[in-house]
Image (cartoon, rainbow, N blue to C red; front, top):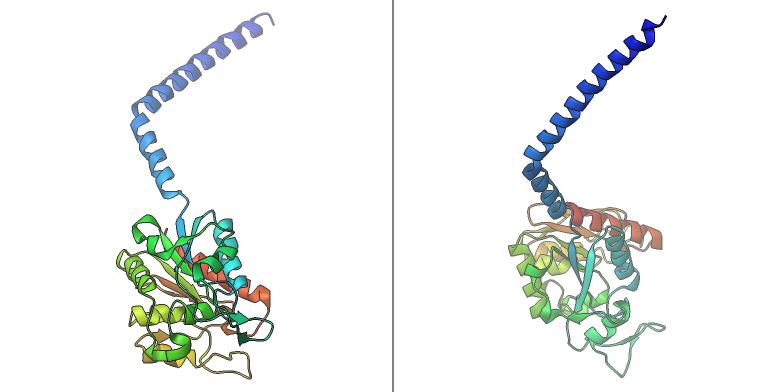
Length: 274
């Protein structure tokens, strides 16, 4: 009986010695591999950085500027994804200012940058300052401002022209292989500037009033781009050109469906960055 405690102590000491040797060896191994740990950690910090995303606005209000709900949805989804957001707008006069209670032009006019600052809470820069080299992606919310202020689509249809800075920005991001997101009517900008690209503005048929701007799909085809039919809660990715589009308020539908569709567009843009 007296030998059992002694035997236990001998076994315990032997076990402890082996464990100490193992731990000591592990410490030496970690020191030897330390540079590899540093490389792994640096790589992780590079690949997990917050994307810098530029958002281009066209005023404030569906009939003469950026669609407010689409713009807000873009900002919320980007923010929730951890993106760093900067907002821009051209420093130009609007095509006209619309009384949104009547849908009619007003006697006064407004500046696109000044109006866009309402959505941006004052934190906005002139579009002339936007350079693709400073950002990972660019987003264009919809609203008639995209068709009136960023381009002349509302007047000229398939014969539209595009604001000089808008065209420059789209080409710069495209040439640098960086994603471009557009929603609602804004995909016509890509269709004009990047012939052969693939976009969606929803459906190419009215379907009983659900898609009142279905004719836009035909104009996109006339400009040399391809239109892809999608529902309001979907987004379409042109992987070759890194363009992601969603119908948004090209469809007469509920607010939450617009929000969800814009979210799909933002997800598509951010996936192209991974």
